[in-house]
Image (tube, rainbow, N blue to C red; front, side, top):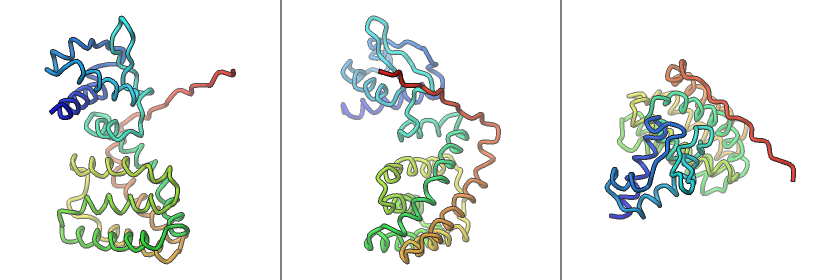
Length: 244
C-alpha cells in the first residue's frame, strides 16, 4: 500500500509540474501536500526525493519545495518522457525522441552487425519475424515485440550508452500506442524492413543494417511530422563550468 501511495504521489505531482499546472517557481509545502494527496509525511518525502532526482523540484529549508524550470528536468528519464507525452507538448517530445532515435539506432544497427553475439543475432531475427507476423495479423503482442526488437538492436551494439536508451524507446513506442499515434495497420514494407535489418545484423552486413534502420527512422519521421509542426523547439542554456 505504501508503495502504491508513493507512486500515486509521484505521478500526481510529476504530471502537474510538466503540464504547467504547477508552474516554474511555485512553492509547495509538505504539510499541504499531505492533506491534498491524503498521504503520510514519509510518502511525501520519498515522492519529493524522486522528483528532485530527475530535476523537477528542489527543496529549501524554511521555504519549501520549489518547482524548477524545464531546462532542469532530466529529459532522458522515462517518467519525464511519459508525462510529456501525456501533455500539450507531446509533439515536441515526439520530435526530440524521433531525432534521437534517428541518430542512434542506425549506428546501433551497424555496430550490432559487427559486434553482437550469435545468440542475440538469432533472437533479433526471431523477434523481427514475429513482429512482422503480428503486424500483418493484428496480433495483440505487436507493441511488446516492437519494443523487444528495438531494445535488442540497441543492446546488440555492444555500446552500454546506446543500450541504456532502451527505456526511452519503450516509452516512445508505448506513448504513441496509448495516445493513438500508431497506424491501425502497420505499413507492410516497414514490417519487412525490420526483418531486413535483423537479417543484415545476423549476416554481419553492417552497411545494410545501418541503411535499413535509417529507412525505418526516415519513415517514422515522415509519418510523425504533423504532430510537431507547430511545436517550438527547446533550447537549453549552456552551463559553463567554473575553473577551480
